[in-house]
Image (tube, rainbow, N blue to C red; front, side, top):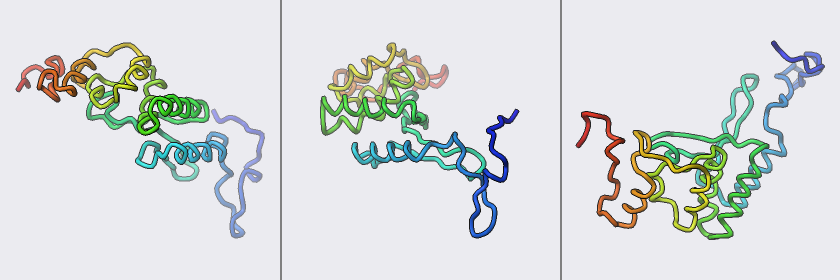
Length: 185
C-alpha cells in the first residue's frame, strides 16, 4: 500500500520548459549533503581507483545508490559491493582515519575494505590475507570470528600468510576442502 505523504500529485511535479516533468526528488534518494560528503571523502582519501561506486537508476524507478567495492574480499571470484548510506558513512571515514594513523601511505587504500568487513561483522576470506599488510591485520581480525576454508574461501588466513611469506613454497595452494569431490588435481 502506498504511503500518503500529504503532497498532491500536482505540487510534486516540477515544470521544465513549460511542460510537467517527473516528480521532485523522493526522500529516499541520497541527499545532496550526503553526496557532497561522499565526494569529500573520495577527495580527502584519494579514492579514485574504483573504491566508491555510484549507481543511478532511471528517474522514477528507484533512487540512486552509493556502494563501496569489496569484490573477492569475502568470497573468491565474487563481484561484491557494500551499500554506503548516511547511516554508515562515518564508519568509512573512521576506518580511513585509523589505518592512516598506522600508515599514511597505505592506510587510505585499505580503509574501504576494512569498512566493508566492519559493516558485515565479518573477516575477509582466508585467502585474501596474503594481500593485507601486516600492520593492518589485527584491525581485520577484529571484524569477526576466524573463517574456515570452504569452496568460496579456499585457504585459511594462516595458510595464505604462510604462502605469502614463502614458508611452504606453495603460494596459491588450495585447501583440500575447497576442491569439489572428483575435481582434485
